Amino acid sequence: MITGALKNKIDKLWEEFWTGGITNPLTVIEQISFLMFARNLDQLESINERKARRIGGKGVKRVFDGPDDPRRWKNLMQISETDKLLRTVRDEVFPHFKEIGGEETTFSEYMADAQLMVQKPSLLYKAMKMVDELPLVHSDAKGDLYEFLLSKLTTAGINGQFRTPRHIIDMMVELLDPKSTDTIADPACGTGGFLVRAYEYLRKKYTSQEGQIENPDDPSGEPIYSADMLSAEERAHIQSGMFYGFDFDVTMLRIASMNLILHGLENPNIHYCDTLSGKMTELFPKLAVNKFDLILANPPFKGSLDAEDVAPSLSGKVKTKKTELLFLALMVRMLKLGGRCAVIVPDGVLFGSSNAHRDLRKMLVENNQLEAVISLPSGVFKPYAGVSTAVLVFAKGDDTAEGQTERVFFFDVQADGFSLDDKRTPIADNDLPDVVSQWKKWNHGEKKALKHFSDRTQNAFFVTREEIVQQGYDLSIGRYKEHVYEEVQYDPPKVILKRLKKLEEDIVADLKELEAMI
Image (cartoon, rainbow, N blue to C red; front, side):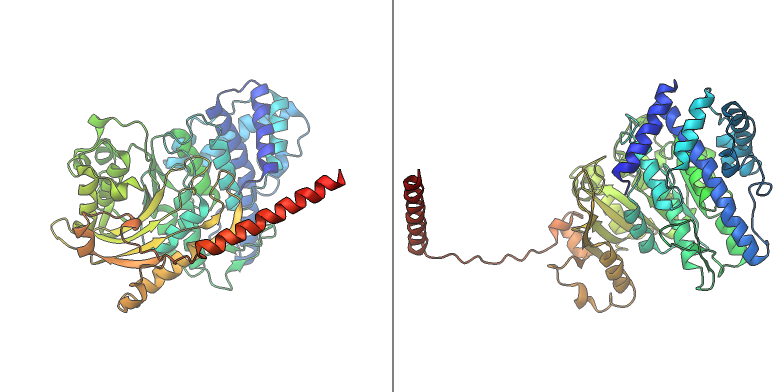
């Protein structure tokens, strides 16, 4: 969680750009992101150097030409002459950005027109000094900084451009439990948060105790996970064939690409595309249908939508202009048979009464396997949005089959470890670990012993498909959860009146005593 002191630093950095003549918020965000990327590249190279020393240099990709490379951040910060600093960053660092991903990669494509917009040497010097003071070592801090930068946009939240809270993403990744052979997509990837956390999960999952490398630069004490349990083929798949992200905002695509590369992915597949449009199947026919093992997403709940441009394969399934419903139909289309999805949806998807809402829920229950409905508290997206949301987990079924869902796991999350107001300060109450724990019990044997999850007064319980059908495919947790009400015992009226009279006598006596003292 970004602190007040850190917000002040970002605000001051923002003001420096404005007073330096760069007033377009999108440009400011891009330029700050580029500087953060330059600094993180140097940090990534330091990690690569430690890895190389440990394993003899085999298989470690280097970003720079040694420790004295003038393009490295630590060497740039030694340049005291501001004019020389500007020339070096403009003429050497930015061209280097375009070479990092290699030729014919999506990263080099999005970085092709990246340029330093800062014209004043003094502004660049001040900005780099400020970026140098930001806590960019830990991935959480980088994500929080991106989120706070995005909050500066007047359009932030209108088209879904705010970051999903990290702990919510981590819970969703754990629910799907990615494997080293999976292909994973986010059809509305934004800054790439879901893909980054899935990659981090895999690195941790496939790192032995001996493979953990101490990171002295990280104050949290989190080690570097080397993924030493993976084969060469698995490593190659993860680096170039596992992760796919789509968005139609080039700025978000640049940030997502930088974010993934900084976390260790050499060639992230980040593509420019409105995935709801018919162009998706034209531009990416092999990715648009029956491609992915897993999808993790928090698609936009609102925003502009060209109804005529919506792919017929989606509008034919769900006749609506609501993006949240169309995205669900899209994810079903993109998944392989048996592929699984964890997606955040607004609560209206769960109980909306329109034909489109009901048809979508019926499709998930009858033609696919709806696995879980996890209700989230309404404040998890504050201060950017106060909408109540839920996480749906489902597996793609055969469209010709019916009744593929047997039982659905429900969980009522009351607290996520943070206050549910605009401040979102950390608190002790947190149900998310219990979500994962109960889910594992449900999936690893106790599902057969259904008695454990039959008590609907608890946060975790199951509902049968037959009951969901009887309720008109309503998936709201309030429809099924049972509440226990304790009977309150009150004293008889005469006892209460006697107590009130005694209280009144005490007040009168105190008033008389006070009056005597005046």
